[in-house]
Structures are given as structure tokens and as C-alpha cells.
Amino acid sequence: MPKIAIVAGEASGDLLGCHLMRALKAQRSDLTFIGIAGPKMAAEGAKSLFPIEKLSVRGYVEVLTHLYGLLKLRKSLLKQLLAEKPDIFIGVDAPDFNFWLERQLKKRGIPAIHYVSPSIWAWRGGRMGKIKRAVSHMLALFPFEPALYEKAKVPVTFIGHPLADEIPLKPSKQEARDLLKIENGKFVVAMLPGSRQSEVQQHADLFVKTALMIHQDNSNTQFLVPLITRETRQIFEQALYKNLQEKMALEKVSLEKNQQDKAETDSLSSDHVNLEHLQLDILFGHAHDAMEAADVVLVASGTATLEAALLKRPMVITYRMPTLSWWILKRMNYLPYVGLPNILAGKFVVPELLQKEATPQKLADAVSLLLVDKTRIKEIEQEFTSIHKSLKQNSAKKAAQVVLSYL
Image 1: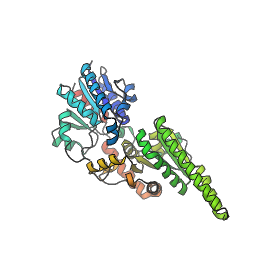
Image 2: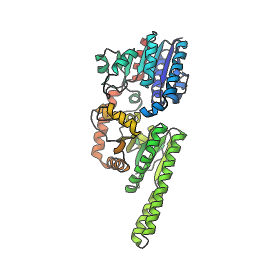
Image 3: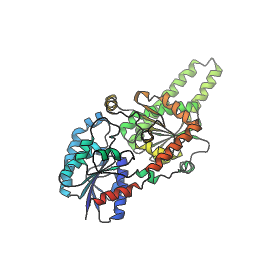
Image 4: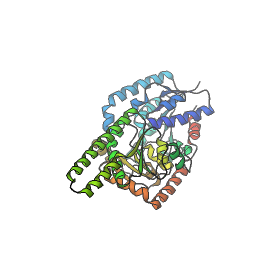
């Protein structure tokens, strides 16, 4: 039975790997899969030699703190894969981890296919030489990527993006709102602070403060915060509780200072009541439904920005990371934007507020503007529809055809 080694490094890679495995099995029922898999790939039959969470580390400083463990894991994984003698290796994203594995396996005559081109179009200097030594074939998700590989004589196939195949060109906001039981007439803001604990720790306080500012200007706004683990939910709930307590304490002091002025007291009391009725719902999962139901999405940069674009939702992209990681990133990166929707459009379609620019006031202002600017919303929807059409390629089937050609 043909054996395929496949390694994914995080939740988005698990989803891509799951789609690819399903497409492969539709054409060949005799395939077996082994490597590092998340729950979706495991459900398709992949045997995971290590937990996928071991690889889910992001940021230069954060990787350094886990470096010894990652290198040890990778050596052990290589030893086990060589013992298994797979016919093909597929590295799903996680380039820093997978390229080394691919190079070692390729040297031993095992074809190495890399699924998802790294962001060579966004970085200075020569990663292409490293890629050429490691990869037998590159599967590119975006239409501007193949030309870069063809120039370097690296076999490449543009396959489009699986999300573009899954999401309809005209999503239904009302169906999503009905599913989530949202009252008619509400402004809805979906807030996605990230999937990793480190990301939620960076963004939770920022997002809560932003929600409070938006709520203060428009109490008819409902906030949806989808989180995928108990740990990330706990981090966000702690930030929410802390900010509500601080806000209520400040208002209590203000009330006591202004007891002589009844009009001022009544006004502050009204604000206090509104604050207590802040509508912020933390969801377990349901990120797709939350974005589809939203009028505007506030999202930490990543794959979720592409999903929001395919759902045709106006968004504000933000991101914070430790200062040293940010400094390194800025020195290497030369594109003026980091969000996938802006990269694919080749211009700033939606605002990006990053690091020091990511303040509650600036985020609240940007979100509030998109809630009411109907002309801008229409322009954004048109841009995102064009992006969607370019990425809708039946990607899993195309990827599976490339993989099977190496058997």
C-alpha cells in the first residue's frame, strides 16, 4: 500500500492537509498517511507520531525559547519516517520545520512536495536556494507565486485556495445571524484575537478596550469573540473582567465627585447602565459563523483575514507581538502590507493597524467608520469578490493530481 508522510504545523495546516487527504482518498483508496496531524487530518486517517501543538509556535523570540525541543522532535521524526519508508513526503506549511525534513528525505530519493509557498514575495533575500534544495514540487495557493518559482526552475503548480472552493461567492449574513440568534437591527462586530495562547495574550486587553469604546459610542453593537480552546477563552475572560471592573470603579469615582451636579450624575449613571449591558459573546469555535454574521471584523493578521475577505466582510487588520520579534520582522519584510487581502489586491483595501499603531482608540475609530460608510463597504465587497474568483480553482483536486503524479 502506498504510504504518504505528511506533516502539518498548526490549525490552518491541519485544515489544508485534511482537504488534500480527502481528495487523494477519492482517487486512491489504498493510501496510508503518517506524520504529524491535527484532529481534522486524524479524522481522515492520518497517524500522528507527535502532537501538532508541539509545532504551533510563532514569532522569532518564541521559537528560540522552544528551539531545543523542536530540533530534538524533528530529528526523532526523521528517524521514524525513514523507518516507515514513505513513497512521498508532503510538508504542509511550517516551512522552517518542514524544509529541513524535505531536504533530508529528498536526498534519500523520497519526493518532497511542499503545500503552501512561504512568503518569499514578502521577504528580502534568498530563501529560494534553500527551497530549491529541499522541494521536489511546490503547491502555490496564490496566482502571483508561480512566476517566482519558474524563474528559479523549481517545479510549481498554482492550485488556488481551499477556502475559496468552500465558501460561496455570495455568503448569507442573515442565515449566520439566525444561527447565532442575533436580534434584528444590531450592529455586529466579530473580534478574532488569534488562535494561539500567545496571540490572545497580546490582543485580549486591546480588543476588550476597543469594544468598550465602540460600545460607549454605539450601545446597539453586539460583539462576537470566537475562541477555540478553554485556555484562550480564560485569557480573554480575565481581560474582560479586569477592564469592566476598572471601568466601573472609575465611573463610581466620577459619580461621587459630581454628586452636586444632578444632570452630570444622571448622565454618568446612564453610561454606567450601558456599560453593564455590553453585549459581548465569547463563542467556542464558530469563527466562520461569527465573521459571516458580522458587519465588520476586527482580526489579528493571519489566515482569518483571508476567510473574512472570502466572506466579503469589511475588516480592520491588527497585530501585536513582543518588541524584539517585531523589530526582526520589520527588518526582513519589505511589502507595505501584511494582511492577505491587501497583499492579493496589491493595495490597501482595508486598514492595518500594527504594533504601536494598534491602540484601542485607533481600532475603535476604524471599526466605527466601516460600520457606517456604505460606499466604502461596497468597494471592499467588489475587491473581495474579484479575489475570491481568482482563488476558486478546485484546489484539493489539483493538489492531489500533483501528489499522485509522483507515485
